Length: 551
Image (cartoon, rainbow, N blue to C red):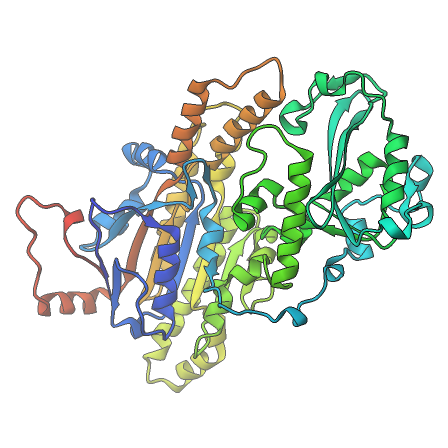
């Protein structure tokens, strides 16, 4: 097999998604090449793809290591082979954000079907009320300990009259910080017609240590002269919320805790629209922008605006059906896509236990959990050597060799992914607002040695893809954390120079590199080379300006 790569300096860098598309097309029977930049000649002969992610290897860090001679094996993929190729690659993101490339490599976007579900077949809003275990898992106030701490229970204490009953209400609260913790400063309630039925500032009994104005929108002037107590707020809400009223909100447990109210008819938009990463929740601002195409919280928070956003999100979900807004409805695992091929392509991921379990969930892929890069490399090398032995045995006329192939063929995976965290972990070991390269030479050298070991162990006709995935995300996170802290404090200011530096760092974190090469039998490659007409390089042109073949 031969890998033809077309790349010109004038074009944009490749995306991590492009590498995924190349791997899928190489391994599956789909006759359509989705890439405009690569082509595998004799594709059926390329039986395996091995992807190695050197997490957080930026272009700048690579240039540093290359200048110190720390990447002999990466360079060997390019220099020691007539057609090896190094490709500038961009991590997912935008001007204001950057994401890990690794999840993008493993999640294939789905084409959204234009399916209209009849209204009579859609479940009612009550279908999305949180179950008891969800209330508990998300720390909603429940009967028991909470009831004895001044909480009122809507189920037993509601005074709502039939003529003012609401089927559902959207609620959002704003809080201020006191020495005792967060305290209710404002509460807003909207009905199904988006009418504001209650919007009040609340007297805070304890001394306020921080108005959290950037997040609450509350200033000292707002609370000056306010006499409405929490008990009075509770009494009013009990008069309009019946035991059957559905309360809608975003992470509503925080609002109910601030209100000191217990209710079990809750629709939570943070759970209606789950984050793809287990244990994390999407913010209301993100969801409003993505699904409502509206911008909220651009300045100070406004509880009416937030309540309306949660209401609209809940009604949108109800109008579209349960699958709407689910991460797995927008993408599927690359392992699922490969296993659906005919014949199925087997896969394995080598990573830490958390990421392994996350990415193989509901797939047939194998998982090898490791906590150290060296152990992960050793596992992949071991698997490659088995594949190499079977490749040799498959060409042998010996019956015992044929039996060996038959018995052990299942241990050879068509798609293998190894995630190395050494660079990322080193970069995380700093609190400084600049790149942390002190002592990183040995880390880069180990990463390069791992690439050398892996390539050396590969069987012939295997496509090796090595990528950084993304650049220095730990530095981005440190700067963003400093920006957030400055925005919350009255003692520090986030300057325009710091913002400019953050934008520069974000752009640098999106710039990484990838290396592509199909490992072929050198004897066959030499024979093919002598029988194939050689392309002449244009005068004044560089290798980047011509078609390149990677064998």
